[in-house]
Length: 471
Image (cartoon, helix red, strand yellow):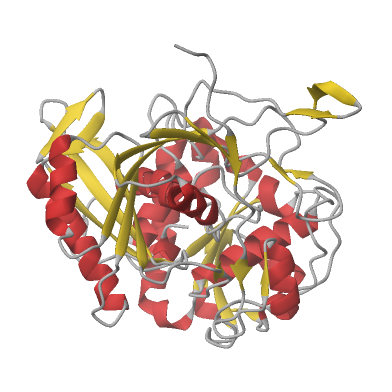
């Protein structure tokens, strides 16, 4: 018995590519790459992006001014070691943003505000008002690309429910996603009044482009015959006296990390243990088979050579069997549990000839560091110091001690190289975020968002959904 752990392995920061043919147009910094090369799908998104608006009575001009601001240049006043200057939406994406036709500009009657101020359930009243205002826009869906919804700070009492899990953001996403309508919620405190305008412009500009159908970047140096699947669940109830049922969601990403589409459906063929649902063999076969159908549809009927499946809970024996039954022609199948909440922490220790005993480093553990805990488990630091971003070491957030995620392999073999590199690369594929990376691969970070929204959707269709409606 020994207290020693395996040596640390370090994986470099994954690169992104910004052109489908000119593969030399690459960078590890997503925003710097966009500014240098433009988006991956440059020229493929219709210009201008037409924005419909929904605002309080008499306040639409605030949204129009915000749209005009997107076309202006501004320098950052925060995260200056990371954020580039914002040169304007037209310059970054080579296209314009414009207000949609007048009939796509809606204002709420302000008469409900006094009632909301006195209501014990202001979130219900506000949600009803907003949904009622969105409904007429469905008739003009072909005349706008994205809907901007302005939420002033004075409505804050209606953003969340007291004593339940109501979230206005997720409620609106659930309603509009079911109708194929991408929305951008513009809050007064987080967008219109936020002090760093460059930060706001990068976040909203990037999200707007992706929601309009654009692809900002893809992963470079990937195996073109690998598919990534993220599986998530939302446990719901039909009523107090009725059994719970589960919405199963399977996201499919191609080798370049681009989200294809995802499937979601309700099932009762599960076992729920400590609020964690586990599928039967037949149900896992069903979800993986449908995921592969989605992949083949987007790849000319071709199946991937390798499939890597992520989920946050362990793979039960029945789930493992269901995966293999659905993937008989795949050369490699990796079933990886991604555990976010772990007790492990690590400190970076440096020593050299002048100081053989060593000392704590000025920066934390490097992002991309991996320590094996055995044949089936490893710790991977998704969050940590990045030394290759610029002249100085970059530490996203600049505070705290980064904790690793735990990777548990329930199927697959060999070293951790492919699993670790995939997780690091997929952490850079959230187009609704202006950071260098997410703390989780997109297979898992999207899973959280989708689970929250899907459990609020009253009717799940049989056709696949596009990610951009849920961003």
